[in-house]
Image (cartoon, rainbow, N blue to C red; front, side, top):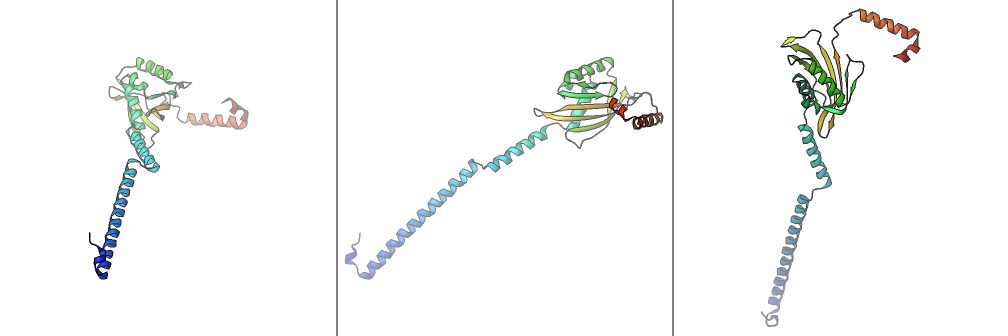
Length: 218
């Protein structure tokens, strides 16, 4: 180490400035290093610990993917008809909700509950052969939980008389699966009254207008 008392005053000043400059640069260097380390730690924290908003977005995307994987409402209805055509009530059972209500307008009362509905279709399939098949003419695809369909029956590929019909189905998601919660069938009548039906409707409305209390008995 050089003894500053042996150096000229100018040399002493120069040495003092150099020492201070070295110390200043050293402090700046270590300060920058600490800043870089802090930024790295913060970036790691952001990556390993996502914010609440990020977690919510990830959960929403997962739910969207799960919904996409569920069969469409029209697919459920098509599978329903396919099961009836094949007399495979086992495949139909899971398509019907436990508390489903099914109205076939040929019958005076609706069928309530999965068990009653399957019992009805068991009688139906037992009374016909597989040669008689439902054929879907048109089916809606726009609504994710409601489906309308028009259909007819065919016997060995030929149209069956008085068998045109239309149906409506409402579905719900149960345990990640879409099931039919309500259904209604309207079938072509074998007797077609034509304009006589209009006369009958006119007569009923006339009676209701004259005797409003009759409406309570409808």
